Image: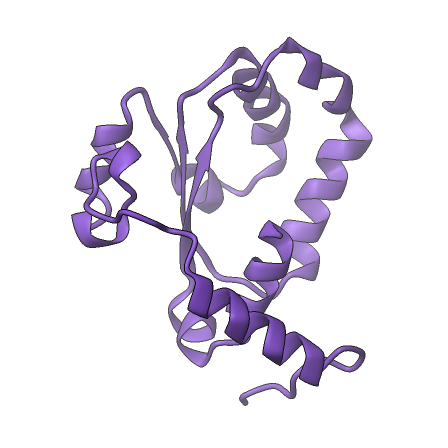
Length: 142
C-alpha cells in the first residue's frame, strides 16, 4: 500500500517540482528484522530509491529509533551522498517533528492535529487512476 501511494503521489506535478518529505516510524521494530538487513537488501533499497524512482527527496525524518534502525543507518550511510546524509533527521521524541512540519498535516500521535490520516477519498482517487493506467502508466507532465 505504501509503495502504491508513493508512486501515485509522484504523478502529481507539484510533487515532481517541489519534492517530498517523509516520516519513517521505527516503533515496534525488533531484533527479528536483522535477518532482512544484509548488503544485498540494503543495496536494493538504495538502488530503487535513488536510481529508479524519479523523486526529489527533501528530508527523511526517522522517529522512535531502534537498534535495527541504527544498524541499518550505520551500514547505509557510507553509500549515501553528503547531501542526502544531511537530509536524514533522527528524532528521539515524535513531538520534535513540529519543528519541521505544520501541526495541520501531522497525526495526533506525533503531536499534530490530524485525526485520521487514512484519507478514504484519496485512496478512491488513487485506485481510479491506477485502473486507468495499469500497464503503461500515466503520461509525464513535462
